[in-house]
Amino acid sequence: MTRLLLVGATGLVGQSVLQQALADERVTQVVAPTRRALPVHPKLLNPVTDFASLPEDAPWWSVDAVVCALGTTIKVAGSQAAFYRVDHDLPLQVARLALRHGARIYALNSALGASAESRVFYSRTKGELERDLQALGYLSLTVVRPGLIGGDRQESRPAERLALAVTRGLEPLLPRRYRVVPASQIAAHLLAAALAGEPGVHVLESERLLDPVPARR
Image (tube, rainbow, N blue to C red):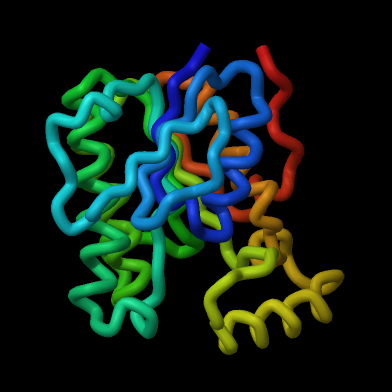
């Protein structure tokens, strides 16, 4: 049985991870720190948290596995520096604190094209996070790299909505890597990785996220 820490629980993918984890009998408790309180659930521990000053010695860091679905856009964040804080520094800080308190499994929602060597700031940020997470030495690290994510976002992303509409229209002609991946499918792969805890570093590119989630062992 697994005690799971979920960061990014209010985002599109994070909401789906939360729903699936709460419904999974293998998960004994979901710890989901958020800025605003979530609906009450008997399996949910929801510390309302200031992410600008994470409590380093809070007892809720003691978990078996972490799923990180934190993410924003430069437009929403307001600057490249603020974006880097949310998409690199915070996930890395969470990883360090959870590891210090005993977590050995980490599953990250990254992005298609992530590379520390990329000339594109967004892709480079994601790649630097992947690189820095690997350096921490988790027993099991899984990175999923979706392209366009399908689902209903609460925040407005007009450019993404347009890209989704165009991509769906062209989907029969597109390679699998560039097709829309439903948020629920990404969440299922993240949760499966967190519960399986296969040793080593595992990268699931966008086309693999369209495949069925491996059967439970």
